Length: 101
Image 1 (cartoon, one colour):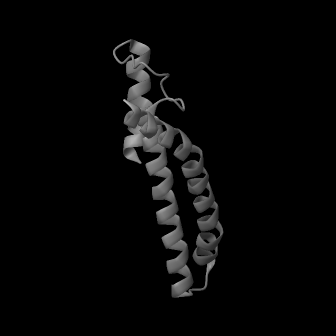
Image 2 (cartoon, one colour):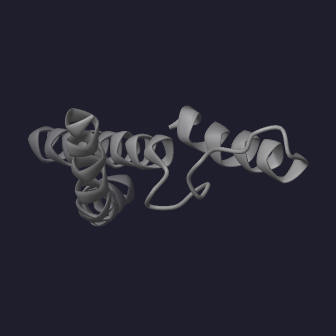
């Protein structure tokens, strides 16, 4: 996740300053680095939120913290899954293009 945020910040600053000029549009669906980091970040969000929700169910604790985790866990999982779903198509297209070379 730190790599994704770092690429957003550092890549944008380097692109604006003219140091980093890739052949693709920066931070777009044609940017393979952005797509791969977004895919990995979405997968990590799904993994962490899903496991936290399942572990909370197994612990079967009572309290405000448990209710908060059981409410926010599926929401976070949905956001992570949506990120994976949006980024998997461009990544597969980019990987297919690598095989055609």
